Length: 343
Image (cartoon, rainbow, N blue to C red; front, side, top):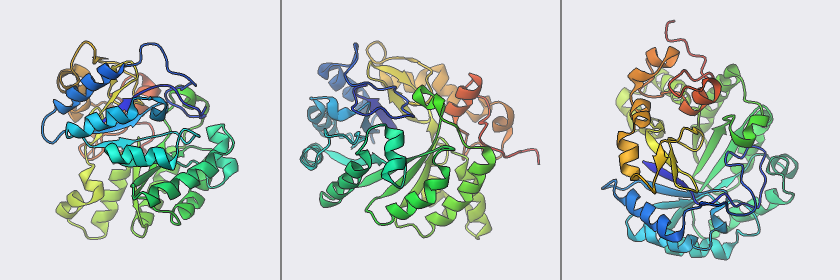
C-alpha cells in the first residue's frame, strides 16, 4: 500500500499538466509540523507491514521541516520516497541529507528527450539540464530513481527517444503517466484508445530487454495486454502472478493507494478529486477502510459498463480517475480502454 502525501502546494515550476496547480508559496491550511507527525502516526496505524509513504507536492523540498518528517516516518518503521521538483532547491547535498534520514528512493520527471521538449512542458528553462544532473547525483549516492514520463498527444511520438535516453542512465523504473484531465492538465490532449493499445504492445516488448522496470500510471489496462501476451508466450497464471505485472494486479485508485493533500483532505488518489474526509477530523485508517467511496472502489462488482463485466476487472479495474474525469462517476468504465468483454 502507498500513501501519497502532498506536503505543500509550493513549487518553483509551473508545469503544463500540474494536477495540484502548484504555486510559488505554501497555501493557507497546510498541515503544520505537528499535524504532519500526527498523520505519520495514523499511517503507522495501518499495522504491519505499514504502508510506504511518498512525500510529494508541489515540491516537498519547499517544506523546511521535510528532513524532520522523513526521519519521523523512518523511526515509525514507514518506508519513504521523495518526489521533488527539479529546481535550484534540489542539490546533491540535500539529497544526501534526505537519504541519511531515511529516503529510500526518489522520482524524477522527464517529459521529453530534449531540453526544448521537456522545458516546454515544465515552463521553466534549464529544467532538462538540471534533471540530467540530478540523475548523476542519485547514481553517486546510490539512491534508486523512478522516472515519470507524461503520455499525451504532445509527447507520444517522442517516447522512443525518451526510452533511448533513459537506457544511458541509472534508474530502477520508468513509469509512464497517462494524462488525466485534471488541474492544468485539462489544457492538454489525451491519446486515443487505439494509440494506447499500440503503445502497450510496444512497452511490453521493451520491458523484456530494458535495463529497468516499466510500469504505467492511470493505465491499468496495460495489465490486460501484458498478461494476455504472457499467456501467449507460454507463461502460467502462477508465473504471471509472481511477475512485476502480476504483483500490481488489483492495485488502483482507492485500492492500495490513498492520497492526502496539503490541507489534510483525503482522496482515493491525487488524480481522483473526490474528497472523503480530512485527517484532522477522522483517522486515515478509518477513512481508507470504511468510507463508502473506498469500499466501492475496491469492489469490482460495483463497476458499471464494460469495466463491470470485463473478465480482466480483478487484474485491471480500469482507471477510476479517468472514469471520474470523463463522466463524474468513478465507477464508470475507463474510456481509454477499447476492450469489449462481450466479444
